[in-house]
Image (tube, rainbow, N blue to C red):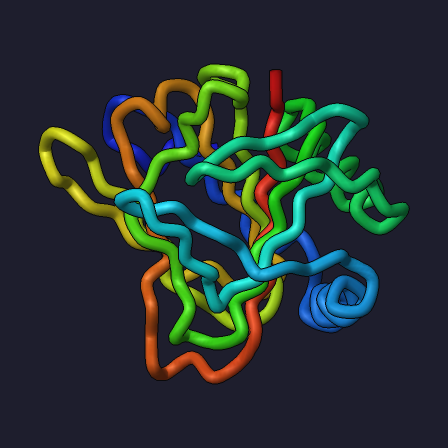
Length: 191
């Protein structure tokens, strides 16, 4: 499999791992069964509630701290364990937690950031599964500014690993053209 990054990291596209019907069925199940909450982000000392909703699942005790808040892991659901197993086999990696993001439409996105919190095992694999609407995913090198864009489709899996989080930031672009839901699952290995 070809590394999509020209230097300083690894980004792999595993393509569509769930066909359309199955991916939409999984998404519907998640809308009903996942403990969704609006995310809270702390910027410049103020706390904001985001439009997008999030959920944090994982092994017992795998909490996650970012933007001034701590997420306590809900225990894996049978559906999430099934997806995790498939993703682990394809990425040849192990994960003990998953951050789920629910974007209601293209007005919700995610600005430039790196998944480099101290609670994540350094240089471990972060696998990202997209369900629902196609959305543009951008990565940008911190020093050169070089940018790569992928249109992530329903059922598509990508994997960032190695030193990627040290040298590249990534973002989910907003788009007024996108009118429907997207759920994104990012599987991680936490300390």
